[in-house]
Image (cartoon, rainbow, N blue to C red; front, side, top):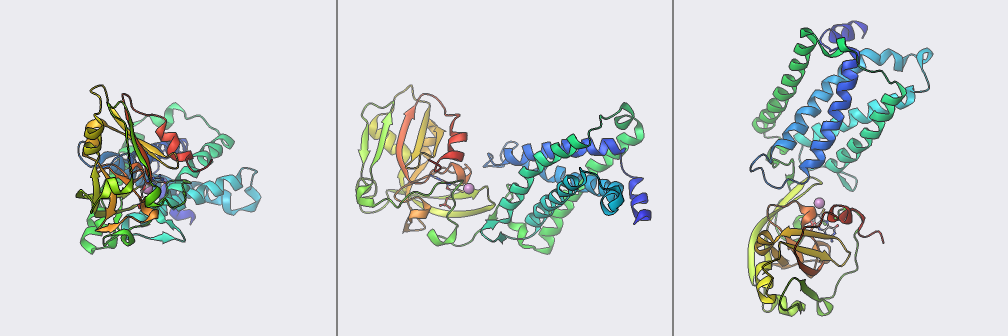
Length: 363
Ligand SMILES: Nc1nc2c(c(=O)[nH]1)N[C@H]1C(S)=C(S)[C@@H](COP(=O)(O)O)O[C@H]1N2
Ligand SMILES: [Mo]
Protein backbone atom coordinates (compact mmCIF):
# COMPACT_ATOMS: atom_id res chain seq x y z
CA UNK A 1 0.00 0.00 0.00
CA UNK A 2 2.80 2.39 0.92
CA UNK A 3 4.41 1.91 -2.49
CA UNK A 4 1.14 2.40 -4.33
CA UNK A 5 0.17 5.52 -2.39
CA UNK A 6 3.68 6.93 -2.82
CA UNK A 7 3.47 6.55 -6.58
CA UNK A 8 -0.06 7.97 -6.66
CA UNK A 9 0.98 11.00 -4.65
CA UNK A 10 3.50 11.97 -7.29
CA UNK A 11 0.54 13.10 -9.42
CA UNK A 12 -1.17 14.92 -6.58
CA UNK A 13 -1.12 18.68 -6.07
CA UNK A 14 0.37 19.78 -2.70
CA UNK A 15 -1.49 18.42 0.35
CA UNK A 16 -3.08 21.70 1.40
CA UNK A 17 -4.10 22.44 -2.16
CA UNK A 18 -5.86 19.07 -2.33
CA UNK A 19 -7.68 19.80 0.94
CA UNK A 20 -8.84 23.23 -0.14
CA UNK A 21 -9.79 21.90 -3.55
CA UNK A 22 -12.00 19.32 -1.85
CA UNK A 23 -13.84 22.19 -0.14
CA UNK A 24 -14.21 24.08 -3.42
CA UNK A 25 -15.45 20.94 -5.22
CA UNK A 26 -17.94 20.08 -2.47
CA UNK A 27 -19.29 23.66 -2.65
CA UNK A 28 -19.51 23.70 -6.45
CA UNK A 29 -21.06 20.22 -6.49
CA UNK A 30 -23.68 21.26 -3.93
CA UNK A 31 -24.52 24.49 -5.74
CA UNK A 32 -24.67 22.91 -9.20
CA UNK A 33 -26.65 19.93 -7.88
CA UNK A 34 -29.24 22.11 -6.17
CA UNK A 35 -29.39 24.55 -9.08
CA UNK A 36 -29.97 21.72 -11.54
CA UNK A 37 -33.22 21.01 -9.68
CA UNK A 38 -34.65 24.23 -11.08
CA UNK A 39 -33.83 23.41 -14.70
CA UNK A 40 -36.51 21.73 -16.80
CA UNK A 41 -35.17 22.07 -20.32
CA UNK A 42 -31.69 21.64 -21.83
CA UNK A 43 -32.24 24.68 -24.07
CA UNK A 44 -29.92 27.64 -23.60
CA UNK A 45 -27.41 26.52 -20.98
CA UNK A 46 -29.91 24.27 -19.19
CA UNK A 47 -27.62 21.25 -19.55
CA UNK A 48 -24.67 23.05 -17.95
CA UNK A 49 -25.32 22.68 -14.18
CA UNK A 50 -25.76 18.90 -14.41
CA UNK A 51 -22.65 18.63 -16.56
CA UNK A 52 -20.59 20.71 -14.11
CA UNK A 53 -21.96 18.56 -11.29
CA UNK A 54 -20.75 15.37 -12.94
CA UNK A 55 -17.29 16.69 -13.85
CA UNK A 56 -16.75 18.14 -10.37
CA UNK A 57 -17.92 14.85 -8.85
CA UNK A 58 -15.31 12.94 -10.83
CA UNK A 59 -12.59 15.43 -9.90
CA UNK A 60 -13.63 14.98 -6.28
CA UNK A 61 -13.23 11.24 -6.70
CA UNK A 62 -9.59 11.68 -7.79
CA UNK A 63 -8.91 14.20 -5.00
CA UNK A 64 -10.35 11.75 -2.50
CA UNK A 65 -8.04 9.00 -3.77
CA UNK A 66 -5.04 11.35 -3.36
CA UNK A 67 -6.23 12.28 0.07
CA UNK A 68 -6.68 8.69 1.24
CA UNK A 69 -3.28 7.77 -0.21
CA UNK A 70 -1.86 10.51 2.02
CA UNK A 71 -3.73 9.94 5.27
CA UNK A 72 -4.64 6.24 5.33
CA UNK A 73 -1.98 5.43 7.91
CA UNK A 74 -3.39 8.04 10.28
CA UNK A 75 -6.71 6.20 10.09
CA UNK A 76 -5.47 2.61 10.35
CA UNK A 77 -2.82 3.06 13.03
CA UNK A 78 -4.50 3.35 16.49
CA UNK A 79 -1.39 5.00 17.90
CA UNK A 80 -1.95 7.97 15.63
CA UNK A 81 -5.65 8.44 16.41
CA UNK A 82 -6.65 11.91 17.59
CA UNK A 83 -9.92 13.30 18.79
CA UNK A 84 -10.73 14.51 15.32
CA UNK A 85 -10.03 11.16 13.66
CA UNK A 86 -13.58 9.81 14.05
CA UNK A 87 -15.03 12.88 12.37
CA UNK A 88 -12.46 12.62 9.59
CA UNK A 89 -13.35 8.97 9.03
CA UNK A 90 -17.10 9.68 8.95
CA UNK A 91 -16.52 12.54 6.50
CA UNK A 92 -14.49 10.24 4.28
CA UNK A 93 -17.11 7.49 4.35
CA UNK A 94 -19.95 9.91 3.57
CA UNK A 95 -17.90 11.44 0.74
CA UNK A 96 -17.23 7.99 -0.71
CA UNK A 97 -20.90 7.02 -0.38
CA UNK A 98 -22.01 10.27 -2.04
CA UNK A 99 -19.69 9.63 -4.99
CA UNK A 100 -20.67 5.96 -5.21
CA UNK A 101 -24.41 6.67 -5.21
CA UNK A 102 -23.90 9.41 -7.80
CA UNK A 103 -21.92 7.13 -10.10
CA UNK A 104 -24.22 4.13 -9.68
CA UNK A 105 -27.12 6.48 -10.36
CA UNK A 106 -25.57 7.51 -13.64
CA UNK A 107 -24.91 3.99 -14.88
CA UNK A 108 -27.75 1.88 -13.52
CA UNK A 109 -31.49 2.29 -14.18
CA UNK A 110 -34.04 3.57 -11.72
CA UNK A 111 -33.03 1.99 -8.37
CA UNK A 112 -34.83 2.27 -5.07
CA UNK A 113 -33.13 1.89 -1.67
CA UNK A 114 -36.07 0.81 0.51
CA UNK A 115 -38.57 3.61 -0.09
CA UNK A 116 -36.06 6.16 -1.43
CA UNK A 117 -34.95 6.51 -5.00
CA UNK A 118 -31.15 6.19 -5.10
CA UNK A 119 -30.87 9.78 -6.29
CA UNK A 120 -32.63 11.01 -3.14
CA UNK A 121 -30.10 9.03 -1.07
CA UNK A 122 -27.31 10.70 -3.06
CA UNK A 123 -28.81 14.14 -2.37
CA UNK A 124 -29.19 13.40 1.35
CA UNK A 125 -25.59 12.19 1.62
CA UNK A 126 -24.34 15.14 -0.43
CA UNK A 127 -26.15 17.68 1.73
CA UNK A 128 -24.76 16.15 4.93
CA UNK A 129 -21.29 16.28 3.38
CA UNK A 130 -21.31 20.09 3.46
CA UNK A 131 -21.39 20.51 7.28
CA UNK A 132 -19.14 17.45 7.69
CA UNK A 133 -16.50 18.90 5.38
CA UNK A 134 -16.65 22.29 7.11
CA UNK A 135 -16.37 20.70 10.57
CA UNK A 136 -13.56 18.46 9.42
CA UNK A 137 -11.65 21.46 8.07
CA UNK A 138 -12.32 23.35 11.27
CA UNK A 139 -10.72 20.61 13.39
CA UNK A 140 -7.66 20.48 11.17
CA UNK A 141 -7.49 24.04 9.92
CA UNK A 142 -4.48 25.01 7.78
CA UNK A 143 -4.37 28.04 5.53
CA UNK A 144 -3.13 27.38 2.04
CA UNK A 145 0.30 28.84 1.37
CA UNK A 146 1.41 30.60 -1.72
CA UNK A 147 3.53 27.67 -2.88
CA UNK A 148 0.49 25.36 -2.60
CA UNK A 149 -1.31 27.11 -5.41
CA UNK A 150 1.39 28.55 -7.65
CA UNK A 151 4.02 27.01 -9.84
CA UNK A 152 3.89 25.37 -13.22
CA UNK A 153 3.81 21.80 -11.92
CA UNK A 154 0.86 22.52 -9.65
CA UNK A 155 -0.99 24.28 -12.47
CA UNK A 156 -0.35 21.29 -14.74
CA UNK A 157 -1.66 18.89 -12.11
CA UNK A 158 -4.82 20.95 -11.80
CA UNK A 159 -5.26 21.08 -15.52
CA UNK A 160 -4.76 17.31 -15.63
CA UNK A 161 -7.37 16.82 -12.91
CA UNK A 162 -10.03 18.88 -14.69
CA UNK A 163 -9.28 17.29 -18.05
CA UNK A 164 -9.49 13.84 -16.47
CA UNK A 165 -12.87 14.76 -14.93
CA UNK A 166 -14.21 15.98 -18.27
CA UNK A 167 -12.88 12.98 -20.17
CA UNK A 168 -14.19 10.54 -17.55
CA UNK A 169 -17.66 12.11 -17.79
CA UNK A 170 -17.56 11.83 -21.59
CA UNK A 171 -16.21 8.26 -21.52
CA UNK A 172 -18.80 7.26 -18.95
CA UNK A 173 -21.53 8.62 -21.22
CA UNK A 174 -20.17 6.80 -24.24
CA UNK A 175 -19.74 3.53 -22.36
CA UNK A 176 -23.25 3.54 -20.89
CA UNK A 177 -24.65 4.25 -24.33
CA UNK A 178 -22.62 1.63 -26.20
CA UNK A 179 -23.13 -1.05 -23.56
CA UNK A 180 -26.87 -0.31 -23.49
CA UNK A 181 -26.71 -0.04 -19.68
CA UNK A 182 -30.13 0.85 -18.26
CA UNK A 183 -28.83 4.28 -17.29
CA UNK A 184 -28.41 5.26 -20.93
CA UNK A 185 -31.97 6.53 -21.37
CA UNK A 186 -31.68 9.21 -18.71
CA UNK A 187 -32.63 12.78 -19.55
CA UNK A 188 -30.08 15.60 -19.40
CA UNK A 189 -31.29 16.08 -15.80
CA UNK A 190 -30.22 12.53 -14.94
CA UNK A 191 -33.83 11.36 -14.55
CA UNK A 192 -34.84 7.90 -15.77
CA UNK A 193 -38.11 6.86 -17.45
CA UNK A 194 -40.70 4.97 -15.39
CA UNK A 195 -42.43 3.50 -18.46
CA UNK A 196 -46.12 2.95 -19.17
CA UNK A 197 -48.94 5.45 -18.91
CA UNK A 198 -51.72 6.40 -16.51
CA UNK A 199 -51.93 6.71 -12.70
CA UNK A 200 -50.14 3.43 -12.03
CA UNK A 201 -47.11 4.15 -14.19
CA UNK A 202 -45.33 6.73 -12.02
CA UNK A 203 -44.75 7.13 -8.29
CA UNK A 204 -46.91 9.29 -6.03
CA UNK A 205 -44.39 11.86 -4.81
CA UNK A 206 -44.62 14.41 -2.05
CA UNK A 207 -41.84 17.00 -1.98
CA UNK A 208 -41.55 17.12 1.80
CA UNK A 209 -44.49 16.68 4.12
CA UNK A 210 -47.78 17.13 2.24
CA UNK A 211 -50.36 14.46 2.95
CA UNK A 212 -53.90 15.86 2.65
CA UNK A 213 -57.12 13.84 3.04
CA UNK A 214 -58.73 12.83 -0.24
CA UNK A 215 -60.97 15.56 -1.66
CA UNK A 216 -64.43 14.42 -2.77
CA UNK A 217 -65.28 15.56 -6.28
CA UNK A 218 -68.74 16.72 -5.18
CA UNK A 219 -67.17 18.90 -2.47
CA UNK A 220 -64.40 20.31 -4.64
CA UNK A 221 -64.33 24.08 -5.06
CA UNK A 222 -61.76 25.83 -7.22
CA UNK A 223 -61.59 29.61 -6.96
CA UNK A 224 -60.03 31.87 -9.57
CA UNK A 225 -59.36 35.24 -7.98
CA UNK A 226 -56.98 38.20 -7.72
CA UNK A 227 -56.51 40.75 -10.49
CA UNK A 228 -59.62 39.66 -12.39
CA UNK A 229 -62.80 41.43 -13.47
CA UNK A 230 -65.09 38.65 -12.32
CA UNK A 231 -63.79 36.17 -9.69
CA UNK A 232 -65.37 32.75 -10.02
CA UNK A 233 -65.46 29.41 -8.39
CA UNK A 234 -65.80 26.09 -10.14
CA UNK A 235 -67.10 22.73 -9.03
CA UNK A 236 -65.69 19.50 -10.39
CA UNK A 237 -68.49 19.13 -12.95
CA UNK A 238 -67.94 22.70 -14.19
CA UNK A 239 -64.35 21.73 -14.95
CA UNK A 240 -64.88 18.31 -16.43
CA UNK A 241 -68.43 18.13 -17.85
CA UNK A 242 -68.61 15.13 -20.16
CA UNK A 243 -64.85 14.71 -20.08
CA UNK A 244 -61.72 16.80 -20.13
CA UNK A 245 -61.94 19.79 -22.49
CA UNK A 246 -58.32 19.52 -23.66
CA UNK A 247 -55.52 17.05 -23.50
CA UNK A 248 -51.81 17.34 -24.02
CA UNK A 249 -48.76 15.16 -23.82
CA UNK A 250 -46.27 16.47 -21.26
CA UNK A 251 -43.21 15.21 -19.45
CA UNK A 252 -43.14 15.18 -15.63
CA UNK A 253 -39.52 15.14 -14.37
CA UNK A 254 -39.12 14.71 -10.61
CA UNK A 255 -35.94 15.78 -8.84
CA UNK A 256 -35.87 12.39 -7.14
CA UNK A 257 -34.69 11.07 -10.48
CA UNK A 258 -37.54 9.73 -12.61
CA UNK A 259 -39.64 11.05 -15.43
CA UNK A 260 -42.79 10.02 -17.23
CA UNK A 261 -44.43 11.16 -20.44
CA UNK A 262 -48.20 11.20 -20.05
CA UNK A 263 -51.30 12.36 -21.86
CA UNK A 264 -52.83 14.84 -19.41
CA UNK A 265 -56.52 15.81 -19.71
CA UNK A 266 -58.08 18.90 -18.19
CA UNK A 267 -58.77 22.57 -18.68
CA UNK A 268 -56.36 25.05 -20.23
CA UNK A 269 -55.49 27.66 -17.57
CA UNK A 270 -55.79 30.33 -20.30
CA UNK A 271 -59.46 29.42 -20.72
CA UNK A 272 -60.05 29.89 -16.98
CA UNK A 273 -58.25 33.24 -17.03
CA UNK A 274 -60.31 34.46 -19.99
CA UNK A 275 -63.51 33.46 -18.25
CA UNK A 276 -62.71 35.66 -15.25
CA UNK A 277 -61.20 38.52 -17.27
CA UNK A 278 -57.61 38.65 -16.04
CA UNK A 279 -56.36 42.24 -15.74
CA UNK A 280 -53.82 43.80 -18.12
CA UNK A 281 -51.70 44.57 -15.06
CA UNK A 282 -51.32 40.90 -14.17
CA UNK A 283 -47.85 39.36 -14.51
CA UNK A 284 -48.06 36.08 -12.60
CA UNK A 285 -50.51 33.34 -11.75
CA UNK A 286 -50.22 31.49 -8.46
CA UNK A 287 -51.49 27.94 -7.99
CA UNK A 288 -52.30 27.09 -4.39
CA UNK A 289 -52.87 23.59 -3.02
CA UNK A 290 -55.23 22.65 -0.17
CA UNK A 291 -52.05 22.06 1.84
CA UNK A 292 -50.77 25.61 1.25
CA UNK A 293 -48.09 24.32 -1.16
CA UNK A 294 -47.95 26.80 -4.02
CA UNK A 295 -46.12 27.84 -7.17
CA UNK A 296 -46.36 30.85 -9.50
CA UNK A 297 -45.84 31.01 -13.25
CA UNK A 298 -45.45 34.10 -15.46
CA UNK A 299 -48.91 34.75 -16.88
CA UNK A 300 -48.08 33.89 -20.51
CA UNK A 301 -46.68 30.54 -19.44
CA UNK A 302 -49.61 29.96 -17.07
CA UNK A 303 -52.11 30.46 -19.91
CA UNK A 304 -50.53 27.57 -21.77
CA UNK A 305 -50.45 25.30 -18.70
CA UNK A 306 -53.12 22.75 -17.88
CA UNK A 307 -55.24 22.23 -14.81
CA UNK A 308 -55.39 18.46 -15.17
CA UNK A 309 -58.14 16.17 -13.95
CA UNK A 310 -57.06 13.16 -16.00
CA UNK A 311 -53.90 11.25 -16.86
CA UNK A 312 -53.51 8.61 -19.56
CA UNK A 313 -57.28 8.64 -20.11
CA UNK A 314 -57.98 7.86 -16.43
CA UNK A 315 -59.41 10.11 -13.74
CA UNK A 316 -56.51 11.35 -11.56
CA UNK A 317 -56.12 9.41 -8.33
CA UNK A 318 -55.88 11.20 -4.99
CA UNK A 319 -52.13 10.60 -4.77
CA UNK A 320 -51.55 12.26 -8.11
CA UNK A 321 -53.46 15.39 -7.05
CA UNK A 322 -57.20 14.77 -7.63
CA UNK A 323 -59.49 16.50 -8.27
CA UNK A 324 -57.09 18.78 -10.17
CA UNK A 325 -53.36 19.42 -10.41
CA UNK A 326 -51.14 21.76 -12.34
CA UNK A 327 -49.38 20.46 -15.44
CA UNK A 328 -46.59 22.90 -16.30
CA UNK A 329 -44.67 21.54 -19.31
CA UNK A 330 -40.96 22.36 -19.19
CA UNK A 331 -41.01 22.81 -15.39
CA UNK A 332 -39.68 20.31 -12.85
CA UNK A 333 -42.15 18.07 -11.03
CA UNK A 334 -42.07 19.94 -7.72
CA UNK A 335 -43.64 22.92 -9.49
CA UNK A 336 -46.65 20.87 -10.68
CA UNK A 337 -48.86 21.73 -7.69
CA UNK A 338 -51.27 18.94 -6.73
CA UNK A 339 -54.75 19.33 -5.15
CA UNK A 340 -55.09 22.88 -6.51
CA UNK A 341 -57.91 24.80 -4.82
CA UNK A 342 -57.01 28.38 -5.69
CA UNK A 343 -55.72 30.13 -8.78
CA UNK A 344 -54.64 33.70 -8.02
CA UNK A 345 -53.90 36.29 -10.69
CA UNK A 346 -51.20 38.66 -9.40
CA UNK A 347 -48.90 41.48 -10.40
CA UNK A 348 -45.72 39.99 -8.92
CA UNK A 349 -43.84 36.73 -8.45
CA UNK A 350 -43.63 34.86 -5.18
CA UNK A 351 -40.09 34.29 -3.83
CA UNK A 352 -41.54 32.80 -0.63
CA UNK A 353 -42.76 29.81 -2.64
CA UNK A 354 -39.25 28.32 -2.35
CA UNK A 355 -39.68 28.08 1.40
CA UNK A 356 -43.39 27.30 1.40
CA UNK A 357 -42.97 24.12 -0.66
CA UNK A 358 -40.47 22.89 1.94
CA UNK A 359 -42.63 23.57 4.99
CA UNK A 360 -46.18 23.02 3.73
CA UNK A 361 -47.76 20.00 5.33
CA UNK A 362 -45.99 20.57 8.66
CA UNK A 363 -48.70 22.67 10.30
N1 LIG B 1 -49.38 20.06 -3.10
C1 LIG B 1 -48.30 19.37 -3.52
N2 LIG B 1 -48.04 19.30 -4.84
C2 LIG B 1 -46.96 18.59 -5.29
C3 LIG B 1 -46.11 17.93 -4.39
C4 LIG B 1 -46.39 18.03 -3.00
O1 LIG B 1 -45.67 17.49 -2.14
N3 LIG B 1 -47.50 18.75 -2.61
N4 LIG B 1 -45.02 17.22 -4.86
C5 LIG B 1 -44.47 17.70 -6.14
C6 LIG B 1 -43.44 16.83 -6.67
S1 LIG B 1 -41.94 16.85 -5.89
C7 LIG B 1 -43.60 16.15 -7.82
S2 LIG B 1 -42.31 15.34 -8.57
C8 LIG B 1 -44.92 15.99 -8.43
C9 LIG B 1 -45.21 14.51 -8.42
O2 LIG B 1 -46.46 14.23 -8.94
P1 LIG B 1 -47.05 12.78 -8.72
O3 LIG B 1 -47.17 12.53 -7.25
O4 LIG B 1 -48.34 12.80 -9.44
O5 LIG B 1 -46.06 11.83 -9.33
O6 LIG B 1 -45.94 16.68 -7.73
C10 LIG B 1 -45.56 17.92 -7.19
N5 LIG B 1 -46.73 18.54 -6.61
MO1 LIG C 1 -40.50 15.75 -7.22
